[in-house]
Image 1 (cartoon, rainbow, N blue to C red):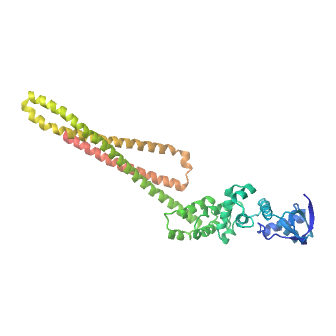
Image 2 (cartoon, helix red, strand yellow):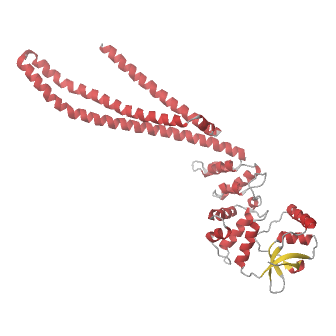
Image 3 (cartoon, rainbow, N blue to C red):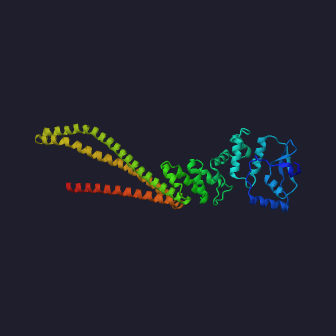
Length: 387
């Protein structure tokens, strides 16, 4: 690979290259470095038919050399003519350079995908640059945002005021346009962490919140939106817990009723079998004790309903006992999962939600306990009256 000195006045910049943002501060630093140490890396150019050259990569170094009024610049000369290969090489080179912004990268990928001159595919680009397909797709998603937002996008992951990282933007990409850009600018202004941006995005995706309410929420600050998300999440959890309790109670009642009906049917089927045996005994007693036959005949029909009622009560309690066992198992499993380390790992709003749900459970258990104590008292009173 030969390096030759080419007069700078014979070199043209490539106005279609993927990188077009050059920070003034970083350019001044490069100028100072070249002035002190010289140009350490040559630029790459391709030949043109008129004897001139066009830059493939190295625009910043070319600009710095021009600023220093140097007459020549070291170059690697290429005879490449394939526009796609040249553009791919420009992207690959800039991916290794500081200052190539996510938006510049996204626009370059989008150009390769949609410009008829290139007609590339996501799979091809992923293979060419050694990136997963999701990397290419996520970069292109950044182009959904408007110019005021795209101007704030910077490389890296550091959260800074009035700047946006790619990770901050991506959670907002699927929101309707009427929310997307406004929220992005709010996230930049208030330096919202990525985890908080994800929560706020969920708030605006929630179908339970009306569009008019969401429009009003746009006037809130980042911390204000986060507080709204926490409150909405807690309220939603409470509603879901109450609905689940009602459903569980209904299912338990249905199960008990089914068990009761099954046992009652068995009792009714068994009653006629006992009646003939009782009638035979009464007939024998009537043969030896004619004076008591009438009493025995009158008493016989009364015993079958009494037996059926006892069986029905037993059936009801059998169903309740099974439901109580299932409830005990569920409570034991839930309590076992709530060890000290698990509780300490919960966020503040998650602990608040857990406290609210446990309070509701205790209240429900207390209400049922009071009801059954009242039933127990009524049974004891009835027993005392009979004695």
